[in-house]
Image (tube, rainbow, N blue to C red; front, side, top):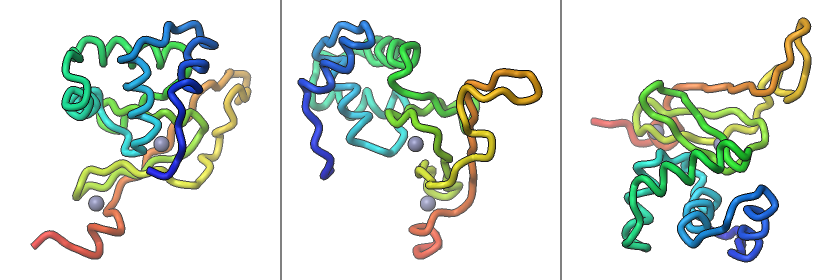
Length: 144
Ligand SMILES: [Zn+2]
Ligand SMILES: [Zn+2]
């Protein structure tokens, strides 16, 4: 990953949101920012527990819940049973490949994606646009 991330910077971000920047929380946030794969909590746990062994699943779940509550990350529910997480909270669309299951960011602005907008008297705070199809890698290498 080319993007330079500093643990000190992340630590400041967490403190600003009123979250104590524990080592595990920092690692989880760092993982989400470095991996734009929109991982599930299980994927984060599997990857990070190799690197920082005394990590528990509960810590991962609780940290994600806390980040979500404070608006540091967003939750993607493309499939009901599979919640994914994204450290990019700017409004953007997501594309899920039905072949490999990868979730990719798309540079299209969903139509009503202006947070805090009022539509017909209702205050809109979130708008998610999920697209599905076959990604370009799977199109190039179709499964036999
Ligand atoms: Zn694919
Ligand atoms: Zn995204």
